[in-house]
Image 1 (cartoon, rainbow, N blue to C red):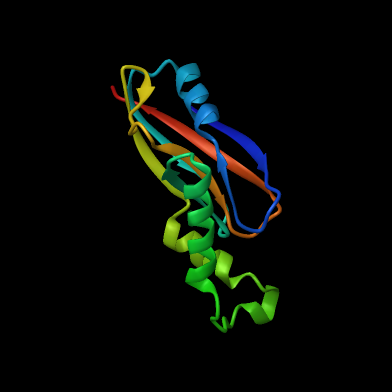
Image 2: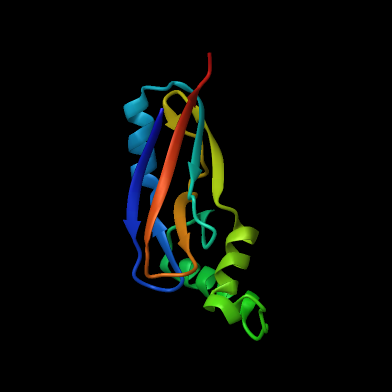
Amino acid sequence: MLKKFNILTENRYQLVDITEKVEGIVKESETKEGLVLVFVPHSTAGIVLTENERGLKNDWLEIFKRLTSGVDFEHNKIDNNADSHILSGLIGQGRVLPIKDGRIVRGTWQQIFLAEFDGPRERRVMVEVIRNS
């Protein structure tokens, strides 16, 4: 089962909690055992698993900025978003999580986030549920 939804971001760098949407799709699929793929088909966004705590989210955003600050990127001569492409590649555009007893297996503090690196934009998130035979 493949479902898609869109997210509107408001800032250049932003973390958007999409856990409830992904869990809703898994529930709708009625899959008891399997995998869920969460993927963003964008080269300037990513998927992060982390705690939904304000300070930690701010720490992530600060690290994103620091990792790419002060670099004279060649790509910036074209459209000034090389940092976004680099961060997307480092973080990754997708995550695969197990499904057990109809629920996504994740740690107590693990939430699923869309990581925006080139906002504000409208982003598409694809969620594919793969059922064990």
